[in-house]
Image (cartoon, rainbow, N blue to C red; front, side, top):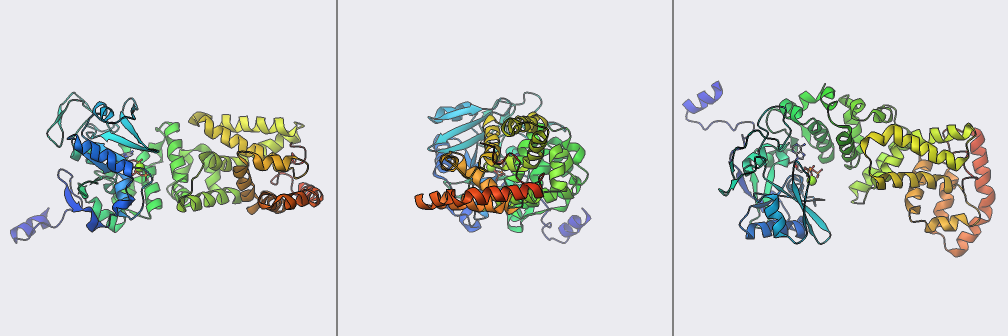
Length: 462
Ligand code: ATP
Ligand code: MG
């Protein structure tokens, strides 16, 4: 304050405040900021253009703009507009309003889905979550239109309710202009993650922002600014009030961010892993070599732009718990396959039941575990049938990771590699000698280390 007064008295312009307050936007030519417009999907461009042609605002917003500035090709695009969800829906042939409280529109263009959200006002009172406002105040949109839904607001209000300055940039793909309300452009350049507004208040409003902070810092290799970082230490109690299903979703985003290992380390560093997911505590405290291999492989795939299956990832994270239970049931006299199904049921009930894991993910996980039993059989007709199995590749990749981390016999993984890649002759040769090799191997290993190795379900698993 005093410095500002002195500068003003001395006729100098006031020093640039640490962060802009957000009521007006600085405009930048996108090209000057290094944005390559070929990284923008046709669908995102066309949705924004259609909105503009009809007299509405249509801007790309959020992570996509940030990623464009970083020279990356965004994986999905969000569009912000002053059109109401109903108005948006009317403009596109395949558009669906989804969500009850925060209605957004999914516009399908070709194989892409563009998420279109109407500008929203910031929460009016502390403790309210985003989008919830009090009263029925009418608000005026950027173009002067009156938006009569009390959730809706102007573009600058919309910017203010976003989490980080680098996530509050708007990009007009037609005019190729970026609108910046909170010095997000400077923060992208400085690789700085800074919460808009008072960080503690914003974390209280929505504690999931804490996890988003750690994820973006790791994923983008950004530094969390001091004021945004401080409240995260000791913020574990805030996360306790977040519904488990939402925490789980956020956890999945962390482990699928391409920096899963770094994210888990950060969770550990801030003491948040115990709150996030009870079962995660054990995984992060003493990650098995296998869990590390699964996370590392996931990171590699994301970084190489390959798809990642949540079912595969979760099958990996829960494998140790599942395998221990499976083997305990067999040791207790249960037959291998019924034991496998029972162990899977128990893992779902105890570890995943409360998160509402999608059926598809659950069935993927069960299939991958089931395949671990079936891939132990390297004789007869089974191997040929296995390579035709629609989920073979997932089961085989899973086996490779297990072998790589000492959780399954290396010879078994090698056999499947040879068999999978081999031609007809190679395959029939393999079926012969391996009869001995694999079962001898397996017997030896079984004797040596029954609990942590491949299950005793081996040869009888089919
Ligand atoms: P990603 O690369 O993970 O998609 P993103 O920044 O696009 O990153 P999204 O979850 O897709 O993240 O959200 C889109 C935008 O919505 C964000 O950039 C941010 O502006 C806003 N947003 C999302 N979640 C929150 C939140 N919890 N609080 C405030 N703003 C949020
Ligand atoms: Mg996004």
